[in-house]
Length: 148
Image (cartoon, rainbow, N blue to C red; front, side):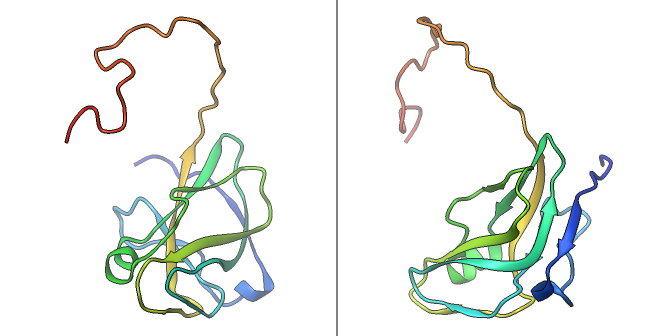
């Protein structure tokens, strides 16, 4: 296991009394983050769920927001822009965009686990414009060209 990277967190007034995001098991890759609000997510609806937290991600990192598999499988609740990215220079409230893909309304209570957060290193790229990209066996074939 690698050393933990410190990330500063500020609890907002509506986040008081809630646990900070935490790993549910010793082998968990993501930390479960909790809702700081109550709502009913209608079928097909999207909502940016408040967490009551602001964070200061260190330079060179991002926090990825990913769905919880149980919510996706059992209720059709997921993160539509998965993985969502929280940039290191963002200091506003962490909100989790959720969508309800089921045919039933879904109630979210304050304190419910709504998503997972994963700290990930960011590798920045530098473009090198060229007229020759080289050749590969696949070439320009895409969108399902490598299998059924």
